[in-house]
Figure (spheres, rainbow, N blue to C red):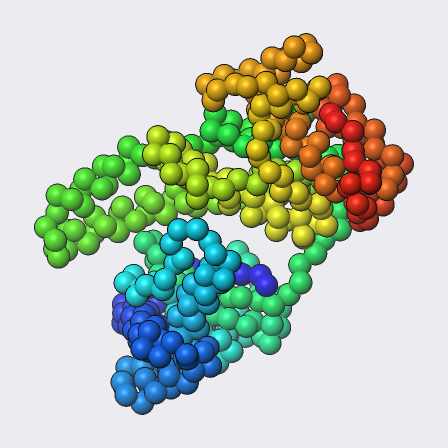
Length: 403
């Protein structure tokens, strides 16, 4: 499923109609959640039927397209099913009991309720909300896809305007040449990551660079009178500041993940629990600013697209263990150099990246002859690279040698 986003332009009456549709979606979602709380034996299909009951009871719900009403009830069920899954998995702590929504910002249509123009430059909504025809502006070309491939159309409200998202059902895959390289990545705060070859990528720290303007915008909001027009304008400016930082993080993560996956056939990385790491209030802001999980998500996505192997390795002991002899060398977080009695002296993150690659290769297994040069720190040659990448054997029988 691909998601293409376009900026939407319309008159003030049309934008007000979009806001009304978004408020209706929030109302239906919260009413469906309350219906489940009162009748906890109800299932997904029961919530869909309840959306039709709401349409008969409230006229503004009837103005919304029927499939958009079903999508609203499905949002409530997704929160309920997530709560059930957390309970079944016995996740420690809070299980995420569904909460009532207060700031919904999108409405989703399925296959009805909208009509795309033949030139693919405008979109018309045909329900009774009165949104009408919206002009679309973007870089994507929808002429490559059939109308039957568009399974969802979303209207999203952000600080800098309204956007239309098209969810297109298509399998994305691309074949690229085999490089014969395997790499291990150790993420950090000083450098965004250090690989097993010793190459470090600088941490961009987008929040740290934009924090001055962010705090200034926040102070302006705090000084304005609640409910005033000036406060609303100040909130819009603050929202744009936050939106810019989030877009910078996403752009950096997408481009870097694509580059890493295309340059290597096998990528091993740390399986970090970010939720537990941000409990440290001294490092929580820096960890969230680094966006390691977003980077990992895009690496896994591009790994499927380009047919590469991505391996999540447990991070326990990767910084303490020597990548040369395997001896455990205890060191505090402030110690940035790994020095072992065997004579191996490396940067702490470089040593961890080599251990991550070693564990990743032992997990994958191999069918060819892997020759890992310790001086190259991750350069890989094989008699049959294709067989290595597309066949896996039991790692307990045959493990890759230590770097």
